[in-house]
Length: 246
Ligand SMILES: [Zn+2]
Image (cartoon, rainbow, N blue to C red):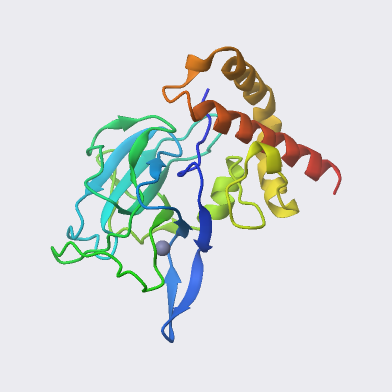
């Protein structure tokens, strides 16, 4: 049984997916920006295989800085197809390497503001309006050669990560912060998405939450995993309730 983890234990949604204006120029933003203090731990949302773990300034990752991409195979009862998630602007060389298998919630890096290109290891300047943040993308992994996903350019084949995360029971509150157990009140929109999934998941999530409560060693990071697992379960349950009252 797999539970999806937020990419950060806490953070604030600072820039959504879609068109945005910077200095008078409109460009498409390929992912979500989630602001968090420098050094905040980044974790894999779902289990999968690392398909890229790049240095700041690496070719094909201009502007992304230290970046990890993970391909997630379809997971019965959770995702109907395979996806790739991307985690950019990391503090230093990520602690995972290409080809490595990772589990949901596994540490894959730390938040910062690296954005190098053409071999130059630069980062966002202080005061530029871009403080430390995770740039998080979700991409379809439809293009494959020899059974392996082709990451291609990091901005390709993207979808809006927000409803994608909602479908996994991970939602933001009205202040843009990831939902926690004590404040879980998803919007009708996100509740509907979470609810569609939670009908399938509720029994399993409840069972896991119960196991977590009675056995603190169920997760490899006991100080944090159980709280998130219970939080996700709560969000899914509230999702059902909200849908039921629409
Ligand atoms: Zn971004």
